[in-house]
Image (cartoon, rainbow over all chains, first blue to last red; front, top):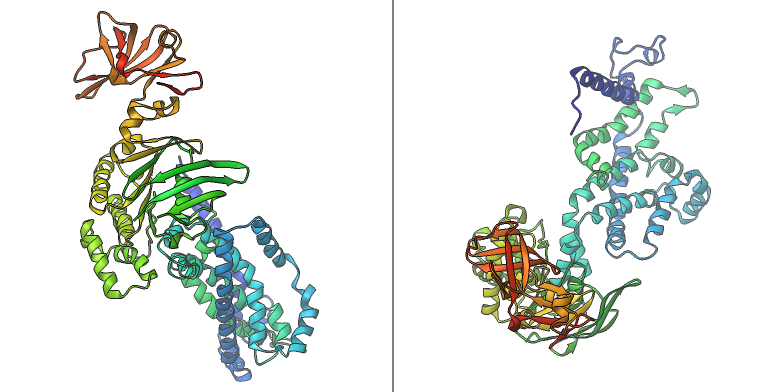
Length: 276
Length: 333
């Protein structure tokens, strides 16, 4: 039987939850507010929270100085494109692990996960040289390939978890009905797993959008996404905090809006299988 | 044509022997029921016939052709699963049509066959519904419809009625029986319910721990069980099995007498007993009694028997219906 909470307890928990949420959200909130300040107000002591001269000059300057749309378009192409290609590999891989596991399947899954634990900087030099020799530096194909590969373990793991929830006898029924392996995946498995695939894609797109290490090291201008756009506002003279905040706000706005509208799917994706 | 033969079929899962050298023949048009307790291997045997599991050794022949290494989609069989296994994202029409679509049939041919199957199973009004919008019995019919349209050599049923309530189970049992009469196609039906087995089968295959205990018609198994296992499994309530002096007197290690094959008197008889419980069903009375020196007995009396707990009764087995078993549990004829 669930324990009944008193009104005081409920108020206390609610206040605590809002406090924690506010603390987590505060850096983003501060960035957005700073983007509407002058450079002087941005570095003033004591810091000004809400009462300052609100201005749009930073946004004008940022748009005038660099082509935001070019970076945004690259981010969209890379985040969505790399993960669609990733799905084409991840779906059959997850199928085989979920429905035709071998002796080493569990080991393979753990090995894939272990690659995410390795510091990326450890392979920066060899990968940079490889890209240089193959002419892939500052190319959408090259960056997309890296983003696809670093997210592939996550795609496979999440899809594997979703596929395990699909009753095996539905796939067996498809086999009895004459479906080949491809038909089984296309007509039965994938449509049934659409919510899981959507949640997985959403998470993967967010991770790719925010990926800074590889995009900053392997791209300069042609293939540079919004992460490079933000980094370009750290100048040798120092940080122009207000303009940097405006650039950051423009960079995170699309993904913030996407995340807000798809939060149910995101929560489902992150907790699926954890609670029956 | 739909004859099925199993020759020395064995199945192992790692070190576990699930099916131990089964030899079996099912004739074209026969309704064969695989029955046995949970874990006896009946579903595994069905899946080996379907091709959903590979045999460890032995052969599976369909219409005298070796199908041992042929995939499930090429065996010409159709299966109805315990959980129905309907495609949740497709409508009833889509579920029934799926196999025909996989076979590459034209849209017109598919439509015609789907409508015919739906009419046979009273599903015409539900063709555009999704499985979640159907009752259990309707879902079961869709699963059967999906199998019918394929015009298979044989139907395989894996405990199809176990998820239904008692009343619906009886109704569907009759419908499946009528379907068999209409289609005359071979049917292999797996169940743990021996009442289903007795009422539906032309031939019953009783399985015990991966081996065939006995094969025969329902009445053969009922009247001449070849061992203690079949004697105790077939028949509800189960056969009374008695050891000791009453068995030795008749030259056996164990004797068996069905509940309806013993006479009960309140005055005289061979075995005195005390009534523990009398169950009054109206058409029958089931009496659970404890007999001196023998143990518990279950008896079936026709109609209403006015017996009460702790009442003394006398039970006399009818010798013509007595079964005798040796020390290895085998029938003595």
